[in-house]
Image (tube, rainbow, N blue to C red):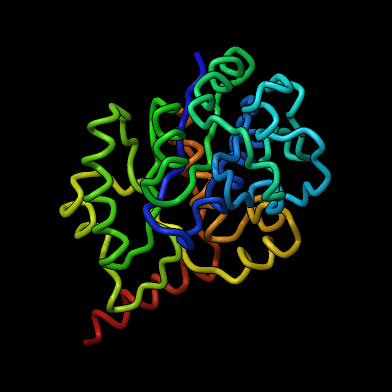
Length: 260
């Protein structure tokens, strides 16, 4: 039985699509899962662009119009996962019924272990259609008060729709004093923070290179947290080994705390 998960955020710019592509790559390449990513952000599609898939004559737009089957619109990534991209052409928005997202998911369920929907940000029609087509949702946020409060508001809509929150992916964490801590976020939202992904320039470099950072820099802190998230979803415990410098830094902190 496949799992259908929407990756959702109430605001744009928090790394929702980045989480989607890296999670898919990790589940496919490290856990051998059959993965399909759906670009449900029709009016501002990014999923294909993030992975360097530029030539897509058949898109989810044409599937939504009933011109092609979902299987005909799938493109295989080097990590082993498949993507169903949206068109970047504004002309392709005509005649689309976004309520058909659910039909696409139903037709792909038997072919996948995970179907991951890259939702549009916010709670507009696109996002609601993606959420209604999912069984579970991962909520992506940065550790700022404004974005975390959006999760609290979004939970009301999720309860009405009947979509189960898996937990929170805390992204772009720098450890600055103005950021909310994991415990504060969990207390405010009532949801578990599954992973905390640090802010790293390698993530931006990977975006420019059109490859998931998990593939390009598998030992980076961000990639290790993505691996941890994939392990949670796959039901497998992953031992994340710390680097020599991380261990040295922790020992130094312990020593200095004793001295003070």
